[in-house]
Length: 214
Image (cartoon, rainbow, N blue to C red; front, side, top):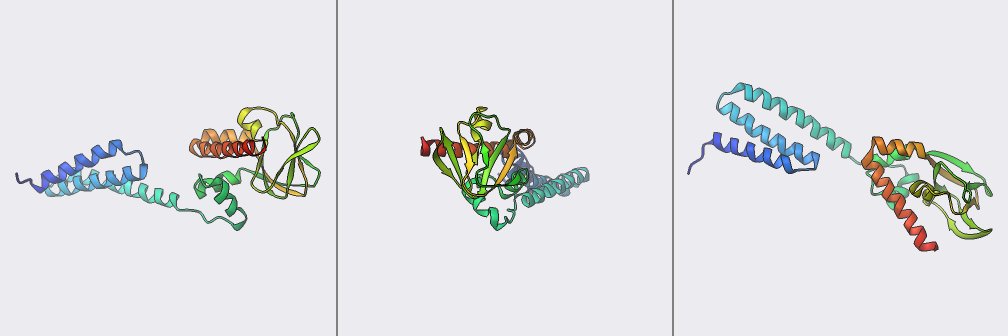
């Protein structure tokens, strides 16, 4: 059976549209829609239906701009040397753009040796990560663990709504990043996918420490 070009283009349009209904990845969805639109646009030219040509041209242009926007958003961001290792070792589940967004939500602070980062059984509204220096986890007056660059502090308070189970004291001068719980909850509402990645990262950190020190 010989099919006309008109029929082939119409068939490709329907196939592309059908595939579009089952694709979840938005980039590929738009690519398929562009392909289907081009098929219908070409058919419109062949049958001289210029209303179809006009609207298919509009749809193709809109989706092409959306594809360009998505590709721009997916481009990795160059990270500064002072956080590159943290991203590689801890935050790599995030894209670099997500990491930059999350990182900017934190407030950096300097603490002196002997300062407390958190206190045993005292409620805290902060999640802390050590950037430089060393801190000790102190329970019943004894040091039970040492924490250094990259470790989170007071994550149990955030994840499980339980007060810290030990003191954490700066052994040396320390440089930390602090995220307020309220900001993290706004992140959950505004960027749920990013928040889920952050929550997984935090859970991994807590699980690792429990396995190592218990």
